[in-house]
Length: 253
Image (spheres, helix red, strand yellow):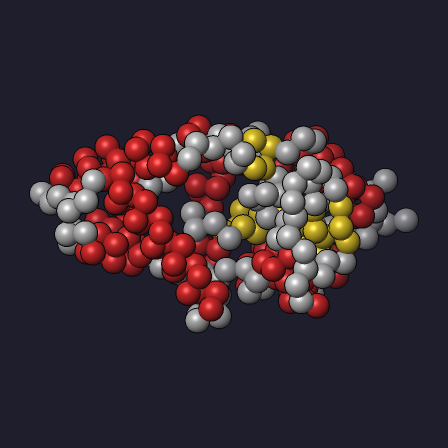
């Protein structure tokens, strides 16, 4: 009997790995502050607030833009360069577009400080899926480029298993908008009925998969509080407690 699915799309944060060991935001901001100061003083300018506070203000600006994208802009992905420039201007720093882009990239700090950890069994499950011939892609709401996400996948020894690395930052839309799913299916050359998507957030991952017409799979890792579907479009086709269960779903064992 042939497999039911040829491709699997994955959310990342909360699905493949978690950040339970990450330091508090204030510690991360203190780590980033010297970088911000070097960049901005290199422009011959100075922030009117301490640089750790500036980092926290930029992150708060990102979150506000994400909320506005959800509520006002039909999930269009915010322009992070504009977000950075806006926050800098509010704190005495005038930045060109190129400078704001430079500072945005400065905020892409090392993976080590965030301390992401794979959920138990993730690597083994991905390797098993890959061995079946299933095609794999990411479909994350991250603002980072595919190049940055590939670095994170490489950190977890996963990068070589993925055929496509797609982010909302590159595609231009946030889940639950289905654009990233459509782009992934086209890149993988797989029809919707032959693909499924795995995620931990009904409001974003499951709704995006359902809107795109592919099979939706909600993962509820043990010992974690998972959000519940709030509307009909957030209800998954399947719910699993571990990625190992995907092998049964796709019909390869």
